[in-house]
Image 1 (cartoon, protein in one colour):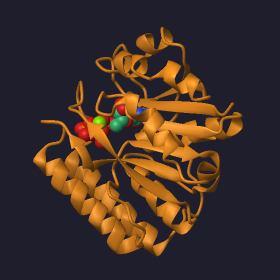
Image 2 (cartoon, helix red, strand yellow):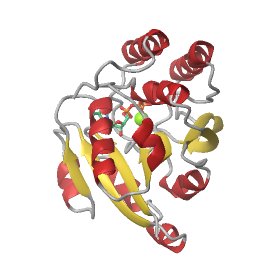
Image 3 (tube, protein in one colour):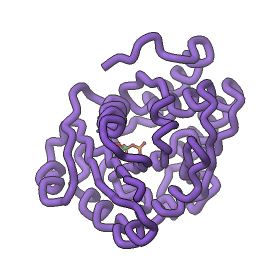
Image 4 (cartoon, helix red, strand yellow):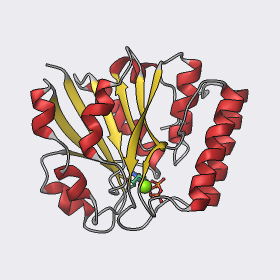
Amino acid sequence: MPNLFIMLPTLDEEMALADVYNRIPFKRLEKKGYNTRVTIVDGGSKDKTLRIADDLDCEIIQQWGEGKGAGIRQAFKKFLESDSDILVMLDSDGTYHPEEIPMLISAIPKDGIAIGDRLRGRLEPKAMTSVNWIGNQLLTWLAVALHGKPINDLCSGFWAFSRAAIEKMKLNSMRFEIEAEMYTSSAYQDIPMEHIPITYSKRKGEAKLGSIKDGTSIARKLIIRRIFPTPHEEQE
Ligand SMILES: Nc1nc2c(ncn2[C@@H]2O[C@H](COP(=O)(O)OP(=O)(O)OP(=O)(O)O)[C@@H](O)[C@H]2O)c(=O)[nH]1
Ligand SMILES: [Mg+2]
């Protein structure tokens, strides 16, 4: 029975976390033969997120350091220390649909990654501002122009990984550049990728990402990884 590790990054997501957790199709996954565990990696929530997480059947990692990238890398380490075979990560703000987890898992290529594609998927009304839509398209275009490997939605927060893919990736991002670096690492470590259209809804609660500031950091990361394809050392 394959072990499935579902990872939910949180920072002040009291409005959405319980609903995201409860929509995970545990029964359907069990029928498909997966043994599922959920891990929440929290970046220092000050609202009720951690109290809500305590009532859910999940493991909680309280990350050290700030940023989604730092949290995800700590969760990847935990995953590799466990006997899990597949990792699925999705944002816990209610934008992605946990019901689509089985579809994403079944699309993982051998030793590869399946990425939920919002831009060619179903974008619900008001799910993405026009500034963010343009930014996402531009960053995806820049990624392909610099690194060559096809990708449809660079900044998606819904990914499914084989264990082999996580073992190979070399990352040091601290913040929202993490997805861009997962892409560049896949390009340089030759990790196969599939792109699966998904549904994207309006987030609950407040965004943590600043479109201009974080968009610039993502572009900077793409350029740095063109010059130095792998990080010199993996910052903790
Ligand atoms: N562990 C951890 N998670 C974080 C941190 N910052 C943000 N997150 C989570 O990462 C996910 C993505 O953050 P969002 O603020 O939704 O950013 P986004 O999805 O790019 O932006 P929106 O489109 O505005 O929602 C959410 O589930 C956040 O709660 C952090 O420092 N640590
Ligand atoms: Mg979001």
